[in-house]
Amino acid sequence: MFASVGADGSVRMFDLRHLEHSTIIYEDPQHHPLLRLCWNKQDPNYLATMAMDGMEVRRQLVFCRCYQL
Image (cartoon, rainbow, N blue to C red; front, side, top):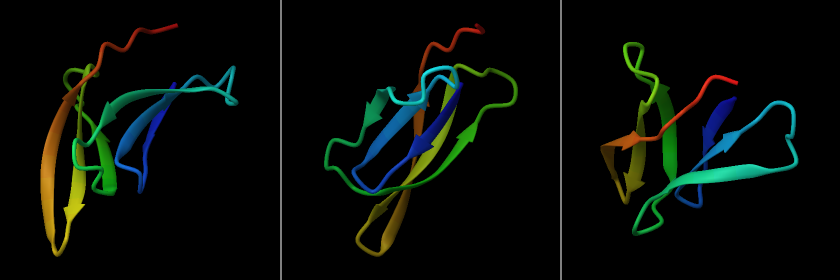
């Protein structure tokens, strides 16, 4: 499993066994572009992302239930 962020304001989770499909686990309400993604090293159910809002960068925390497969 891996995740990515995009200019459409979404965080997508991919399963390496089925890369043609992804699951959107978060969407920025204003659809601001998301710049970076970082997993919490102590609890893999949390990740942080940064959104670009004009000239300002905002940090956001996202909770997602991630299961080991």
